[in-house]
Length: 534
View 1 (tube, rainbow, N blue to C red):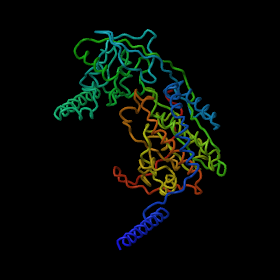
View 2: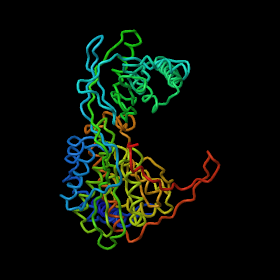
View 3: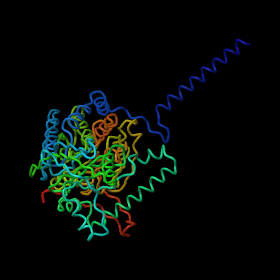
View 4: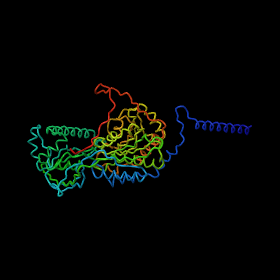
C-alpha cells in the first residue's frame, strides 16, 4: 500500500508539472490583456544596432572634429575647415554632400591670448579674448587695471569715465565665492550658506545700481569706455560651476575685450579695492578676414520609391569658441553623421530620401536652418519627419509631439522598433506644444513641418558646457552619444519605411495667460544673411 501511495503521488506530481509547463507555454505564445507581445526581430534594426556597437566611428569623428579642427565660430577659418571636412567624410561613405551658401558674415580669426599680472607681483592669469575682439599690438598692452567708475547718475558718469583713459576697465561684479551653490549646500552650515547668499545678493544689487547709473547697458558700455580711451575691457562671465565661464562676443571695435577666470578676476578686483594698483600685460592676437561666405553642409541618400519625400537629420554645426564646441553642438553633429553612415551601410536604398542638415549660424539666431526653410519650400512641404539633437552629450530622455495632433500615432509606431534599453529612459509628451526657438527644429515647426527635438539628459550642461570655456572633448559621454545615434538611425529607418504619410494637423492652441488671447502657431522668420558687417 505504501508503495502504491508513493506511485500515485509521483504521477500526480508529474501531471501537475505537465500542466504548469503547458500553461507557461501558452502564456508565452499569447499576449495577455494590457501586455504587448514581443515583436519579431527586424533585420535592419538589428544591423543598425550591431554596426553602432561593433564598428562605431564616434570617437574618431569626435577627435577629428573637436580636437583637430576645434571650435566653429561663424565666419572663422575653423568653421570653413569643418564644412569641408564633413563633405569629404560623407563622400568617403558614399553619401553625396555639398556646402550650400546661405549668407555672409564678418570674418575673424582667433590667435594667441596671453595675460599676465606684472604688478604688484608676477602671475600668469587664466583667460581669453572674446570672439571678434580687436587685436592688441604684437608686443601686447601693459596698463593699470581699474574697476568701472562709480557715479550717482549718468550725468556724473560722463565726468567719472574720463578716469579710465589708458587703463583696463573691469566691468563685471566680483563674485564672493567660486564654489557652486550645491557645493555650499553639501558642506557649509546652514547659517554660513545663508550668509553667503545674502552677501552675494547685496553685491548684485550694488553692482546693478553701478551699471544702471552709467546710462549704458552691457552692449553699449564697452563702446563708451573705448570712446573714453580705455586700454581694454576685462570681464568675467561666471557660469556658476568650478572653472567655467561663458564666452561670447566682444562689443569693442578698437580695443581688446578679455574674459578672466573667476579666480583671477577676483584677485585683480581685490587688489584694486586695496589700492595696490595692479597692472596686467595682455597679448591678444586676432585677425579680421573681411566678408566670409556662410554655409550649411547638406548630405543626401536618395530615396527609391518616394524620393520627393524627406526625412531630415538635423544638427547645428557652428559653435562659440571658448572651448571646442564639444557638447554644443559637436555631439549632435556626431549623432547625425554616425546615423547617416550606419544607414548608408545597412539600409542603402531607403524608400524616402534621407537628408542630413548641418546648419551654420545657429548661435546667432537659427540662421542656417531658417535660410534652408526659406530657400527650399519644395523640400519643407514634403518632410516626413525631422529629428534634431542639440542640447548636450546625454542620452535622449524626452521627445515632444511639437503640437502636431496625430504625432503619437506615427512617432509611437517608430519608437516601438527601438530597443527597450533606449526607450526606457525616454519620456514622451503628445501632442505637446510647438517649439518657438532654442534650436533648429523650431525653424521647421514654424513652417508646419513635423520636426522633433531629441532632448538629452542634462549632464550639468547649462552650468558647465553650454557656451563655456570647458566645452571640450573630455566632457563627451560616448555611450550616450552612441545610444542617440542608434535611436536616430532606427527612427529614420522606420519613418522611411512607413507606408503612411505623416499628418500635419495641429492642435488647437490654448489661451495665453499673459495676454488673455488665443496663442498662435509660430510663424517662419527670415534669417540674418549678413552678420556683423554693419
